[in-house]
Image 1: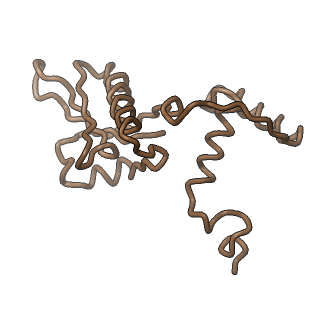
Image 2 (image 1 turned 90 degrees about the horizontal axis):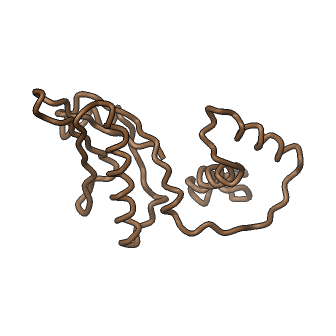
Length: 157
């Protein structure tokens, strides 16, 4: 999942870069981190995100419902005016979303070949077929139930 990260720039050499992840900040949680130099920002914020999301899972929250409004929305919010830069950081949350289960499915060979070709592309970001199918399923399930095939909405009724 991509998270918007606000970066507070250090005022001098003795200060660190401050980072905040607004999508993970609410009345119960706050996701902030710091890095001594720019090269450490992504690593430090990924660690902070994973720690907060793990805590959310422990408390029984459904992390599949996490939403990030995007860096432009957060940058326009006066609450985050101190953040002079905004980044998007991709964090793989799949390990925190439950125990993997092996299933047996059937797909047309042409479709399976297209999936495999996509997974093999270096810039695809997919680890394997299972990861591809999980991402596709999550994408499909994000919409309301009324968007599902066979619903009145999807049939134009």
